[in-house]
Length: 265
Length: 265
Image 1: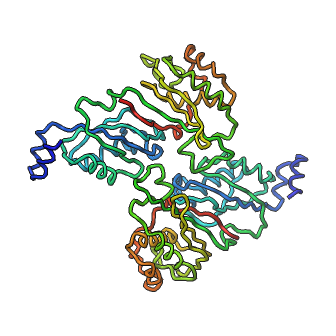
Image 2: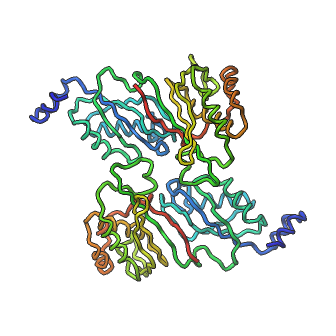
Image 3: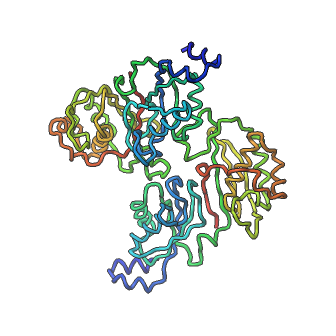
C-alpha cells in the first residue's frame, strides 16, 4: 500500500492512520505444539493465539485480534497454520515478520506475511486442510522424539495401513472417528487425499480434507495403527462409517505426531 | 549373582531376601531434560531422580534411593547419566531394565543396567565426565529445535572458536566460568579434552573434565560463542583465568544445547 507508506515517511501524526481502512494480513505460522495448551486462547495457560495477539499488540501499540484457520489441540504442531490480523499500521510485511519473530517465543515462528483482500477470512475462506501424522517404528523409544512422532516398538504391516488409508477417501460419516461429547449436526466429511508413505524410516500419513471433526485425524491414525498391528482389518473402516461405534478405536493416537501442514484457500 | 537367582526360582518367601546383602546396580540413563526441573529431587516439580525413585519403588515394592553421578540443570539433557540403586530384589538386570522403561515416562530411558561391586558409588567413584554442547548456525530459528540445540543466526568464526576451545585444556581457575553465588573453596578444574568439530552443519563442542563447577560448561560455551561472534579474542580466556571476572561472559549459553554424554569411572 504505497499511499500509507508515503504517509509514514512524511511523519504524519499517528492519529491519521486510524481513519484509513485497515490492512488485512495473512500470516503463515509454524509452532512446536508441545510448548502450548493448543492454538486457541484460554485463561491462565500459554496458547499460540495468545502469544500472537500479545506480540501483534506490542508492535501495533493497540489490542489486536488474531484469528486462526481453526484450533489445534495441546501438543499438536503446525508447519502451516494460517492466522490473520487487521491493522492500520503501515509497516511493510517483511519488516513486520522480523519484528514479530523478534518478540515471539522461539517455539512460534511467523514464516510469511502477505496483505490480502478485506474479504479474506482465515477460517471461513479455507477450502481444505492438509494434516500429517508421523509414526516411527523403533527398537527402543528415544526420549528426544517423544513430542514429535509416535514411536512404535511392535511390528507394523505397512501395506495393510496403506489399504486402510485409501478407504478414507470420499465423503463418509466420521462419527466413529471423533471424541466430541456432543453429536455434531453433520458428521460427514469429504476426504480428498489419504496416503501412507515411508520417508527415512518414518511412516508418514498425509490426509487432505475439506473439514475435520474434533480429534478426527488422530482417530483415523489410531485406526491405521490398529490395522498395522493386526488388531483390525482394513474393511472394518467401512463398518465404522455405518455403525458409528465410538468405542472401537479407544484413545486417539497421541497429539505429538500430528502436524497441521497447510491450509488451502 | 546366581545364588539369589536360584533362590527365586525355588520360590523362597520374599522375607528371606531381606537378610541377603543388597545388589548395587549401575544404570545408564538418557533423558530429555526439557521435560524436567533438572535431575535432582525437589518438592512439587517433576525431576528425573524423582521419576527413577518412584519407578524403582514400584518394582522393588519398597522406598528406593537412586543416586546420580551429579545433578543436571533444568533443560539440560543426558545421553549417559549414571545412577545407582541398591536392592535385594533378585530380578535379572535385563528384565529390570524393561520393567523400569515400561513404567518410566518416555522422556527418560534406562539404556543399560549392570551389577557392580558394593564399593562403586555413582558420584564419588566418577573419574571424569564428558559434556557436549550443540550450536546450530541457521538462517531462521526452527521452533522444533529450540529445546535441543542453540540456534544462531549471526555468522560464527569456527576457527577462532576452535582456538578458544583448545585454551580450556589443562588445570585452570574457572571462577569466571561459574555463576554460583558463593565462591567455591577450590575453583580450579582439570580439563582433559576440549574440542570443536562440525557434524552435519552443527557445531559440536566436546569437553571432558575431572570435575566441573556450577554452570561451567554453559559458561565455557558462552565464551566460545562470544569468540565466534568476534566479541572476544581467544586469548581473553587466559585473562579470565587470572582476573576471575564473573561479569564478562553475561548469561550462560541456554541449557537446551547441553548434553551429559558419559561418566567415566
